[in-house]
Amino acid sequence: MNAPRDLAVRRRTLLAAAGAAATAAAVGTDARAAAVSPSALTARQLAGQRVIYSYPGLTPPAALLSAIGEGRAAGVIFFGENIASESQIAAVTAQLAQAAAGGPVAAPLLLMTDQEGGLIRRLPGAPSLSEKQIGQSSQAQIDASRAGSGAGQNLSGVGMNVNLAPVLDVFYQAGNFIDRDQRSYSSDPNAVASLGRAFIAAQQTNHVAATAKHFPGLGAATAAQNTDLGPVTLTQSLATLRAVDEVPYRTAVTAGVDLVMLSWAVYPALDASHPAGLSATIVQQELRGRLGFTGVTVTDALEAHAISASYSTAQRAVMAASAGMDLLLCSARDTAQGDSAVTALANAYTGGQLAADAFNAAVQRVTSLRQSLA
Image 1: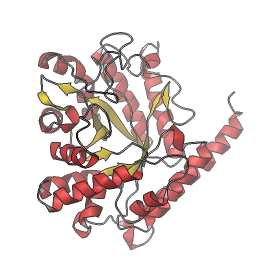
Image 2 (image 1 turned 120 degrees about the vertical axis):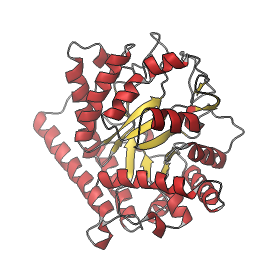
Image 3 (image 1 turned 135 degrees about the vertical axis):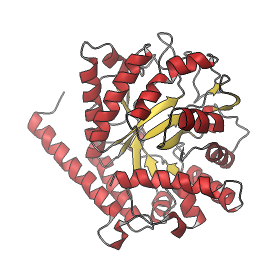
Image 4 (image 1 turned 180 degrees about the vertical axis):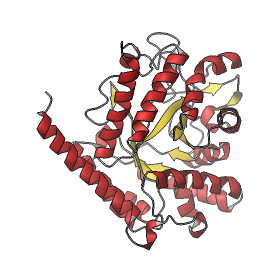
């Protein structure tokens, strides 16, 4: 049952106040209001600016608070198991922001979740419609914009500032991997592009960064092809990739989307040897070079089984950074995973395995995003 309107408004006001308090704590009111230059950070702090942590349960562990306080984390991703109520998660985001307030980087943490709509929501409330429902609506553009606004208001109301949405994959067959949970607007790339742009614009107007995912597209994946569970290879031609799958991402880039998440599938038409998120060809040539994306790139779950089990967290982190991924999503609900990624990146940076110029450019893109959300 929906709460009466006056109660809902009061609840939203309280949550918005908690979110504002969290942001204020992260930014600070003294001389720290200007973000610290990367040159002032240690190698581990510099590496931490590229790592998103996760944790189990409802209470952030001391290890996570320490990593944040010491400037070794760029942010946190939240899952359903972390959220008992809006007021509870608002208190958590305020706690995390307070931990960051004592650290060396005076910019808001990136506090994110998957609030796509429909079945894929970590928070109660907007957007209630799935992307497929929006795509089938007689007022699809209006509903896409409302979904973006609703997602932005919902997340900002509990102190979050990044949504890992919208999905911009163009589904090929009804019931396939991306369609079965109604996560795609349409099988028409132009419709996906238009509706995705409406969602992005409306959400980012509400000061919550949007993430276009999963480049260059998972729309061809069958119901059995899940990159969380195992390797996936998608064999559409280069012409098809560019004429269908990439169309919504090109529009999102033009619309100013803040982040793009890369797929863990392999696309032989672009790179037969590496999943997209580990492919310099796809990240740097296709996404940045051909589509002109200048924002923040973010991996899908670093622990995904699409990547060979022979690679450790440390190896995955360095491979992703080397390919051009700015942010690494350590989403196994284990702070040790984030610590491993930080250590690996720091060692690769100081040892010269990761070029300093490219590393610092990635940190600067992340820092600029964080500052823009203050």
